[in-house]
Length: 424
Image (cartoon, rainbow, N blue to C red):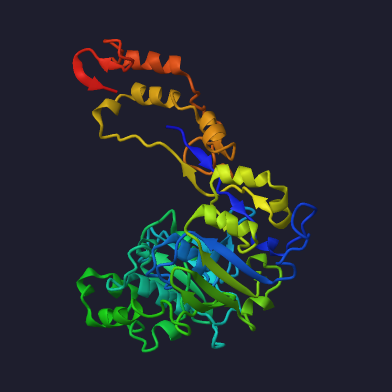
């Protein structure tokens, strides 16, 4: 089956918190958000945790990314990775000799301005600690642990504590994605230094799975740093303020955040003085809240609702509506264990029966595009020369007939004459 790209629908970006006044027909022409430097973001569900290694919900990660930071982030204009805590993307090398022969290395350097809330510099030691915590078998980090399993060691530069090299015995195509995961302050999350004297190799060794020190660390780590103010500590521009279960989570911009000292790094911009994630688990209610300006930002709106909002002139006086390309796609998958699908002609016929453009126009309201496989079309390695499988029912019938599938009993469903109980 060919895939088609589904565009996530964003309504009101964070830059649109400076609202314009309404024209005639939109109340008295004044926005109640005029001059307001705060941002209220919509979430359909509450977070599960605010510990980035033990939480598992997507909406939690969105909230955490304003509190914590990774070495890298995504430039949403280019969809390419750029440095966040790190000055730049890593220097990657293939290793052809030594103990890591056949493996690879990734060398990062953390920004000189980067410090924790207590003023101490963010260093390689924090990166090493974070990896150890994620790999600790007693930590409830199953959701994220696989991103770190390729790592065999991390060595800090002897002359620069902010520079370090990750070593792996194998070459892992997704190694750089580890840089997108957040880094935790060792001083706050392991104040007793329980993991400091263990190597990454020792933590990964299954023979140490029941190590009592690992369990002691995990007992605290799994149950703390979750929603208590003062224990949720990251390097981002915002600090955790309050969590009202099922209603909202509030963050406040730090007065002395280190990112303000870095020039020419738009990925470090942090404009709102506070961010509140408001939990509204019904889209009808959420859209009503937007119309009354009780929400500033919402994302993932259904295509029908998005199209209707585009027609609302009063709504557009307050909000910017965007439909940027997202890094996701929808597809129909085939169960290759089904013996009916072992014949390539059958699979090809099913592809010819998929009218992708009708799906885009009628189900996605034009807010999508067909693509050739699971590679994002913005990527330089997207193969545009691949021939598309066009919607062609006649060709599908021809291929099915060649594969032995015909409508032998006139009921409109193809079957195999030798297998009367078998229908496709």
